[in-house]
Image (cartoon, rainbow, N blue to C red; front, side, top):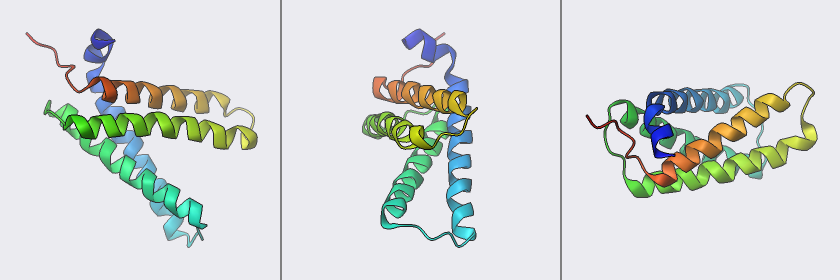
Amino acid sequence: MDEFFCKTRLFWAITRIIFSILTLIDIFAKIGDNYRYTAIESIYNFLFFIYAVLLFIIGINEIREKETNTSLLFITGITSMIFSVLIVALTMNHLKSGYFLLLFLNFAWMILVGLKDILGNHFYVEE
């Protein structure tokens, strides 16, 4: 696993940043539309906002090849795995046809990002 994550380090950093930006755009677009959140949706969006910010910070640190706090990585890794399972569980009953592949790719990406974070941020090529 270490070699896989080491060779694809830049991919994970860039996709983290893209995923976090798209998540933040989605959260703020709903606020701009005067969307009325239920209490559960508000909590979910707040937690997802924090998760997106953490992904952005870790992505920037990976591009800069800076070490990230291991406890922050562990928390983000566990959160990635929990959110991936929750997203699949909450959307399976309401999934439109043709979106299964997108849901699966999102699930796989979040699980792999979670594994990368739990294993640590030491995947730099040493020469």
